[in-house]
Length: 415
Image 1: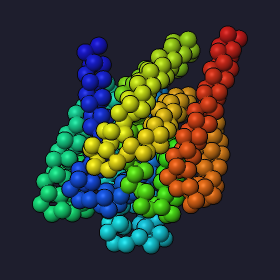
Image 2 (image 1 turned 180 degrees about the horizontal axis):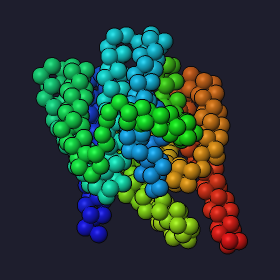
Image 3 (image 1 turned 180 degrees about the vertical axis):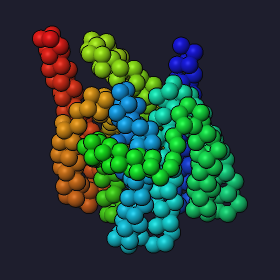
Image 4 (image 1 turned 135 degrees about the vertical axis):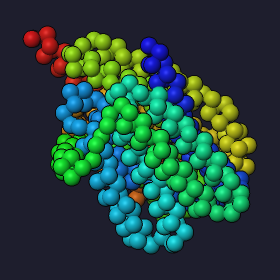
């Protein structure tokens, strides 16, 4: 019980700070460096998050829900290294094909490198979580966020250059991985590396990547629901890119809510399903979704009452005329948190095909509508498209989840 309490406290704190670092940096950059650098940082961060989804191939949910230990921890770590290599090459090609200048390319690549380190560390956190040491991961995230923000502030104040500041954050994360994450991982499970084991891990990585290819596509497309509209805003209305990034900022905090509630329960839910305890599983899931709805409703209410005023005061721009847009965006963020919960649950249950179909269909439609509507209607079109897309995803995923549980229950009763 004490260990579980520590897991909740430190995982919540670490996840909070990890999710808060990007919006806080956006605030600092807007104030210290101006709106142009703010828009550049917001766009570069959004692109790096998409590539981050690639480097997270399979995800920690799949790793920690492998309660039968079908694959070794070294295999899951190897997946992240292989995926990260693909990400590094793809990010370079992306910048070249889009013709970005040196500054924009440099910032994107540094942030992609930062996200690669996060994805590799996440596989180490998975090992800690399996062994009941999730609080260690929370402490690691806390140190990375606090020290990373501190060194960024120092460097940015001295140089007025956000590239140098982000480089400093990347260095902090690398040092903490080397001197904290890896030693702690080896305390709970010594993942040895030699020529024979390297081949074993690599072969397992190939199998895991094939097995979780649908999960990878789903997670990637989930990121697209917000970033497809953002991409077209940058293309056709770059002057509104900063406003879009600022209004999307609360979505990060809403998704953080999902992490607080669900992440510590993943192993527990996985064991319940493995033991065919369907009623207990339903109770846990219902409780999680109820908390998301309750706190999400409170966030939406606060956004309606004071959201525009808070953003105006923090960023120095007038958001009073964008109050309705902000509320729609945040409401979409709450719905998106529900989508994330359902995706994680279906991943635990190894239901990949349904998720894949839902994400492919909704994001293809989103991309088509974005090309048609955003050039003319700009920011308002992008916000509505995001909201409608995640709402459709949530309804569709809920139907899939309930149908599968019903079939599973009927199968157990027959047995």
